[in-house]
Length: 318
Image 1 (cartoon, rainbow, N blue to C red):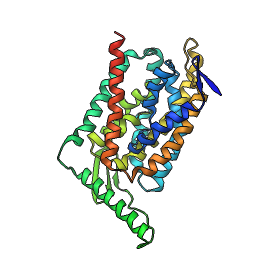
Image 2 (tube, rainbow, N blue to C red):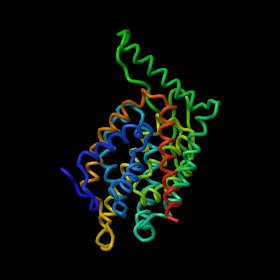
Image 3 (cartoon, one colour):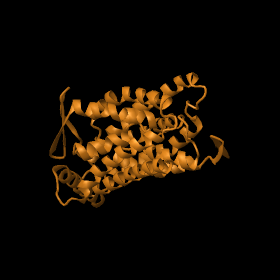
Image 4 (tube, rainbow, N blue to C red):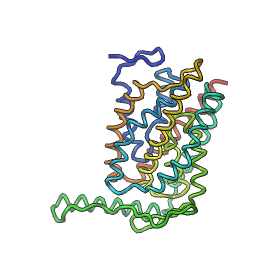
C-alpha cells in the first residue's frame, strides 16, 4: 500500500519507520526529531512546499504525548520551564507561519540563517564535551547515573523494596527567576531572558515546523547549563503545545493562499506520528539509563548535521 506525497508514491510503512528511528534517540535529549524529518521530506520525498511545516508539527502532536508521559511519571518534568517555552514560542509560531507563507515559500535564504543558528548551538553544546573541566551540572548528572545504577542493582539483588527515584523540585518561580533542585544541586535561570529567546525560537519553529524544542533543549543545556535529564520533558511538552497552534494556524490560512500547498498532509503527518509515538516512549524510558554525555553527543551531532546540510544546500543553490 502506497501513499501519495507531492506526486511521489511512498510505501506506507516507510514514514513511521523513519520517524521511529529518529525519535528513539532525539527524544532522550528533549527533541522530537521533527527537524530531522524535514530534510527527509525535502530530499527523499520531494516535499518542499510550505505544507511541510505543519506536517512536521502534526507529527509532533501525535508523537510527543508518549514521551511526555514517561517524563511526568518519573518526576523529571520541570513544569515552569514548559510554561516559559509555551509563553515565549506561541506568538513566535504565528509570526513564523506568516513569514513562511509570505516571504520564504522557497525557504532557501532562511535555510542559511537557520543553519548558522543551529551551527552555533551545536558548537555550544559540543564544546563542554571536549573540555576536561567538570561543572556542577556534570557532577549532578553523574551522581544521578550512579544512583540509577545502584537502584537497578539493588532491585535485581532483591535487597531493597522498589522505590521511586528522586524527583526534580521547584524552589522558586517568578517573573524574574526560576530555581529548581536536581539531585543535590540547585539551578537558576532568568525567566525574562529565556522567554525572549523562546520567542525568537518560536519564529524559527513556525517557519520550519520544528516546534522549537530542537533548539530550546540544547540552549537549556549548553547556554544555561541545566541538566539534560530535567529539560527534555519541558522541551517536548512546549513543542507539543505550540505544534497544536501551528497546525491549526496553517490549516486556517490555507484558503487564503490558493496558489500554495499550505495545509498539512494529514496522512503523512499521522504516519510519522505513529512511529514517533513509539520511539519517544521508548526513548524517554531509556533516558535515565543512558549517560548524559552520550545523550549530549547524540543531540549535538544531530544538530550539527542538519546545520551543515542547510548551509550546503544554500551554497549549492547559488
